[in-house]
Image 1 (tube, rainbow, N blue to C red):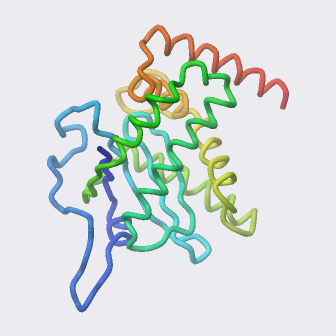
Image 2: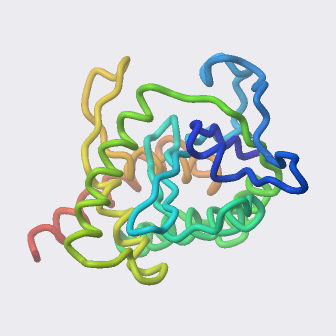
Length: 224
């Protein structure tokens, strides 16, 4: 199940007024005041969603609370929660598959198990009005960079290929969080999470996959 924890701005984005009544998928009464206090479950994915306006277009920033893997959805349609979830599911899956292909990880990706598990995870979802200070800080950093990039480009990312490329750049940026002794890379954290929970790879396999990914990353960096 996907849990989309919405900031005030995101809550307004997903809401609309119909015949004088507010219609919103966002529940103002989450199961717990803090995301970390929800009952732990491997089948639940907690995301934080924030909304801003860039060049008169709605832009959503969605960050995975556990790994800080972030995706940016530019020119999003207001008050279309169902459309957003479908877009989100496609982007999440496509971004991870491209990362796996680019870094030689497809040997660890089960083409039968992975799509089925990801589809199952995205089949149910909830929207809650709830914040997360640490994840919001990372969103603010990414939003600042996105706005600067859009100003430089003169437009928002054109198409999913460009959007996934921007996501990849942001997720290849080291982060730090309270409770984490060392810095970490969101893309590495998410790939490990994905292999474990959606590709049925054991810890030894994940270790080998991440070693392969690091070697491929170094080759790519050396080429550039």
